[in-house]
Length: 457
Image (cartoon, rainbow, N blue to C red; front, side, top):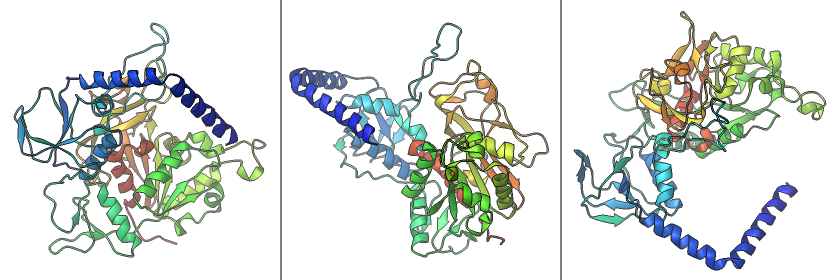
């Protein structure tokens, strides 16, 4: 920690020194950057329609842009572009403004070049990831306007963005709006009760007349926390906290001690290699109490947890632990394929959801998921596994870079696998990726309450 702070202090002092020494150069170049941005004319603007399937996520998108000093305007009446009517209240982000580069980068789809270490060689690894398209990550409809439109515009009030969901009855918390989950957790936190419509996934704080929703008890959530530090585990906890979920961290000794069903309804395993979950730190690498992993004893207790009605949720690479150690009959179709043949270094990929599956509550039929060297499955005929999401036959890449589309064609991206009275859910992607992929948060949150039952002790 001391070294980290020292590095930061050196960098800050260097920055201040250079700013003082080259003040005129910095100011002049900053002015030129802004001037060039204000001359941008293609596209003329991006538009966020006032009516959205998920108004909560649309608000988040606009707040992100506003935080980056992007100027956002609101249409004062309806307007039509290429036959599409945008209602009054829709938000426009014109490109002729100083921070248009930031807005354009976040709103457009990325087409990453096919870069190789040498001709015909393996792909050149990008610095970080290759996609950051906010409309796809958040599930927000955003249009592109090639030419100016004639409509009166007013500057939007900063961080006060009004959007509508459309067609929502009073007293309903729609499954399509991510903010409904915050409301549900607030009600649970205050001691209230929640009901859920088994057809739509919508929530109610009181059972509505004429309908028969099922009461939804608050899930008791555990997040597996390996002794080997794991960034994705931190992101998982952060996302749960942001939306008000109560959870406990679960360490190796608690799993190995057994009796998990007495304390939990669902256990989440964040993105982590199977070998690390199974083995942890080797003996001698750390004090003895921090070495080892779940190994066969842990797997036995997890199988017992599922057999007694618990839900096990595995994210991305942790899924391999479930396949190997829990005896799931599913094959990872990209396992062992070289990077020259299959490569997805942080990209957004299209999947089709099974509309009738409860994991898909609140989501459209097609979405984009975050893939980072992620697994995809093929379950043999007769397998009890049910695919809640599959890759299409073609056109899989939504944004970023993908090599080897053929390996994913038709494969399952999200599996619901029955095990005893419970289930194992395999996410072949990161549904809570860096706290950014708000649309697929719903898949994760639905998994937390899927098959919620009274525990058998």
